Length: 190
Image 1 (cartoon, one colour):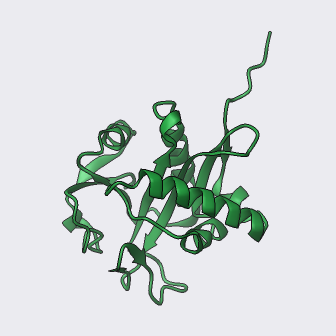
Image 2 (cartoon, one colour):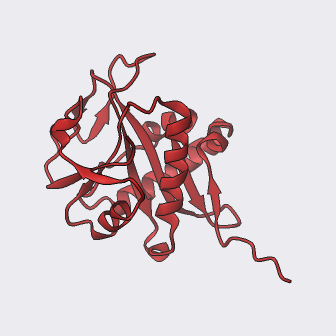
Image 3 (tube, helix red, strand yellow):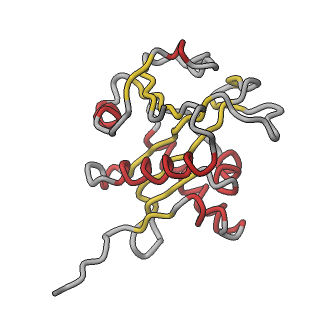
């Protein structure tokens, strides 16, 4: 019997948080390149220094090639606090130190174009949902904002067990404030 190894490596939030700052910076640079390549109005774009805190805080997951030299998929958890607003092109958390968020958003989900439809986004989502359960009480909603013309993400979130579209007005924070593209908010938990 031959043992088949996975063709990718999933890097969990806990693993990334334990990496050296240099290795986290390298992943942040790769994540930013992938996110910005795939954004096309479907998500915010970032700079590397904006991604590093998510890596350090165990709020990001990645899928890399088996040799670890190429990023194939990335996603992160963003805790929206009452003081969170949109500043320019990306969410900014203000005076959130030690505060419990009102909503946690699973976002910046990006898959390399040559690796689409291989289940990598599903692996990222599963890792981040697990991390959400480890970090936050169940009464804090976990959501994903999906631009309506992003058919792949709509299909992904529509088929996740327990995930459903919701009226964003049901949330304690207006996570669509300042966001222009018509979008659907999916609730992944609760």
